[in-house]
Amino acid sequence: MSTWKFMDDKLQILLVDDNPDDRALVMREISREFPDSQFEQATNSKELAQAIESRRWDLVVTDYQLRWTDGITVLLAVKVQWRECPVIMFTGTGSEEIAVQAMKAGLDDYVIKSPKHYVRLPAAAHMALERTRQRLALREAEGRYQSLFDDVPVGLFRVALDGRIVDANPALMEMLGYPDRPTLLSAKAMFFFADAEKRRELMTLLKQSGLVRHFEAEFYRHDGKLLWAEVNARAIHNRQNQVLEVLCYEGSLEDITERKRVEKKLRDSREQLRALAAYLQSVREEERTRIAREVHDELGQALTALKMDLAWLERKMAEAHSTAALRPLQNKTKTLPVSVDQIIGMVRKIATELRPPVLDELGLEAAIEWQIREFEKRTGIQCQFKLGSRHLNLDPDRATAVFRIFQETLTNIVRHAQATQVNIRLMEEGDKLILEVQDNGCGLTRRERSGTRSLGLLGMRERATMLDGEINIIGRQGKGTTVGVRIPLHQPAQEAKK
Image (cartoon, rainbow, N blue to C red; front, top):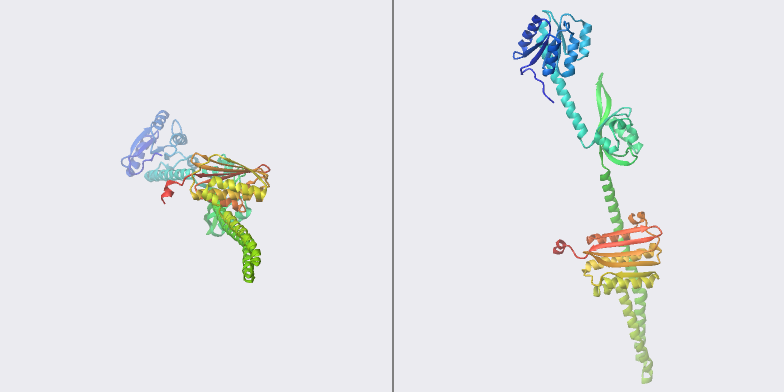
């Protein structure tokens, strides 16, 4: 915006008057206040038109009664071209009615041509220029405010006491999904709240303190979708007869939907981790209970029986006094290795269930083949195994993790899938190991896959994540579930150094 010249500059002043004596009077009086002013005179319509078109004037002084026009017409012509140009009417033929009409049209001051009043010309010029300066400063401030209001990336609003939206910036329109400002302003603020109780809470806080910060609530967009937003608002007051009256409310609205989503995800993750910790503890206790039962019921009974046999042999040998009496004892001793072999088999069975030796001795492929045979014998579910590579070079941690994931997958199939067929694929793809297990069971739903009850799946994911891998689970109701595991074949170099 161009700046206007004021008191310390050389003013360019246009005089519009038929009377040369009156023009001289104006120049003399104004020069008292502004000695460096430059004047141009217009005495007919042509000169006036040329003067208005030629430049922007700092001040125009015009008579009302002119031979070729009147002062109000001059005023309007100047204002059309230069809206902010101050105009003073210096006349002796006007009236109060004309003065009021001229003021409504934008006249800055009205000075009567008389010795008593013309001395007011310098002060009138000074006041007209000062008011112009103030108007321009106010307009510039309003422009800056409007620019800030329109450009700030946070939604801004002003709401009347009856709930009408008085003003809103483009960021708020975009946030709420409205195509333009009139459409948004036609809505009532109260209808944006998804929860009427939250709206009442916000209004109560505003009425009590006049200021609300960091108030969170859900709002409806124009398309009916919900978003979370943080509200900061205040009441705008006007002091009327010593009473503080609320005029409207204004404030900001910031979209925090993504933050809320992340917070919920974090809460869910913490809840899942707590549940997983409890689940793992439960699994450990179940495993300990199972091992204790097998040791007590099977191994303990076998050892007790062996102990009883040895005690019987010891007693009988002490009683035997002939070769014939020792012959039954010799036959009994021949059965003892069988009992010892049974005990050794039980110990191996327990150890194998804890960690199959084949995993360490022959690798992941052989361990999976062994687990498939055991699974088929135990459940009767048919399995088909397709091996894409016979020489997988995996470190023990990765082989163990993939094997445990495979075991958990088979456990989930037995517990939940109601499947009759399982297809397993193990292969290399680039620098990744791929394990895919597909069943023909009832199918795992999305809710079952993401719920906190699916702790086995969560444990599988944690195992894969620890190795920079991932697990994808695809389930279709009635069409089975596919579990896909992808992990790097080798440990990243940076971690290997650690």
